[in-house]
Image (tube, rainbow, N blue to C red):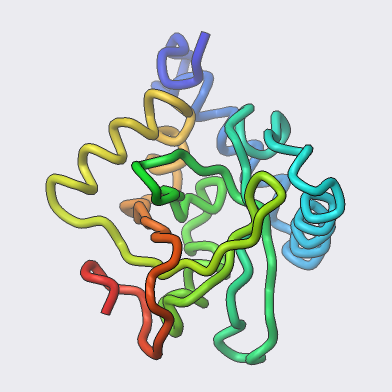
Length: 182
């Protein structure tokens, strides 16, 4: 049974929402989580693409490693995130397991929309943009079909979770993340 369709428990929240809150609580020690996600990215890279899914952190969805430039440090930062394909592009969401704040990789893309992904053992330059309007609604609905728990994360985060499209081979250049990629 998916988290989104779980039965309600006393108190009005679904079991899935309660589970999402617990996962979020367990990820509060940010320095520990940051180290874990960097190790996860290293393991993905070291596997040459053989590690393709993450049951623990991505609900069994395919994962990619994204490398962004730190908005404060200026250093490369890599993390592993779940994705789905949309034509040649990769779609990711800035859910951050339901935290009130978006993930660091998303904030980094706000400063510089150029990034690199490693997926299936290949490294590709990408340009990120936030999906907007009908495109965002459709991609979010598609995401929920693959990972119903994302709806619980959006509920407990108290914010709309951005849907980000990573377009391979897109021209790199200055500028942060925006609906049109500008």
